[in-house]
Amino acid sequence: MNNNHMICDLETGVCGPSGESEVEMIDLNTVTEKKLTLYYVTDPICSHCWALEPVLRRFEKQYSHYFHMQTVMGGLLEKWEGFADVKNGISGPADVAGHWREVGEHSRMPIDGSVWLQNPIFSSYPPSRVYKVIQQENDELAHVFLRRVREAVFAFNRNIAEDEVLIEIVNNIGLDGEKIVKQANEESSQELLNQDFSLARSLGATGFPTIIIVNEENKGVKIVGARPFEFYLQGLQQVLEMDELHAKQKPSLSQLMEEEGRLFTREIEEFYQIEQQEVSAFIQKELLTEQYVEKKILGEVYIEKK
Image (cartoon, rainbow, N blue to C red; front, top):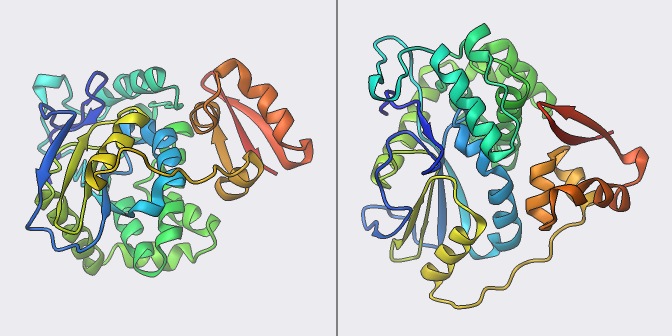
């Protein structure tokens, strides 16, 4: 994959090359999937993918009965050697820090960004390979892992390309970190990752995030960049050719916390469609004090399960 586009545009909501329409009809007859599928093309260090988390969670929780979601690793950064993106003012890791902070301030999903100054990430391939290894055995835990590495790098400023960080994260989701990270460093795991890169190319995904929803005829919509909830709902309606869709009942905050373990204020606002100033009272009403601990990072409140 092309790693010469580390800029993430605030207007388009795209990490990587932009210039595509926000929503467009597509025909993917080269893709052999025979049922309604949502392809989510992403990368562990894609800042706009982190910004999309609140919207994507809400969309998936309410409408996943209409589709099977397949997460595809896109390969945002292979290595810095030979890297040059003069147009966007990025010639090295330090140039990414300020841009990440902009995305965080714009989206209100906390992003520190100083990892690029203190201990630069040399590649997004190591966490992507770990994701692929876990996915082979347990797709649900792979989803949890991807969330945890994003929390680690964006909010908590950790270098998720380092083996020791990845081992710790994998251990914390109940798997054998040393075993899985060792396997992820083998050539066979890179081959798995290359398969994702090939799929991303066949889907026409050049920037992240890209959401592609196709029907059994491999025709559907491609939505490029981090968009509001309504974009994804309308896209699903187009593919299904239905004016009204049935939304599943949202889980209570207590149930959601049990599943997620950690939620940021912006995520609670989006999921329950409440205003920022209403979140504190909502949490107190929905949760018992022994269920959670409230913390603050980069000016944003978040809650963790005790």
